Length: 130
Image (cartoon, rainbow, N blue to C red; front, top):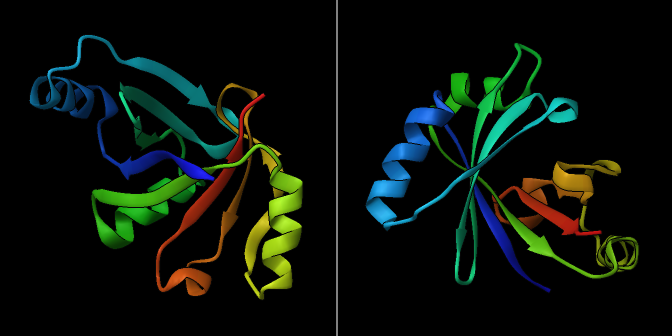
């Protein structure tokens, strides 16, 4: 497993992306809307991973609720695995709790979320790229 990305909840993804680009000296940013999660994301590629800035696209978005409760900031860390089904089974055997089932995320990636109570208050995403 390795760190895939760090996700940050923002109110305005376009503005935040420009600020991150300038601060990190990044030339380009990819934008994508993930309807199933109710977010528009800006993907910033780094040498050793990605930063994903997330803006809610509707009132039912979990990111909208997060922003209302906590404000802008770190939302979750994502861990990449080649075998998401196997890792979920292994982790459940260790008592790790998940928030829902494996589903499709950005760019056809399989994702699921680990309940923050299982990782000392940190929301974590498991992801497996196609």
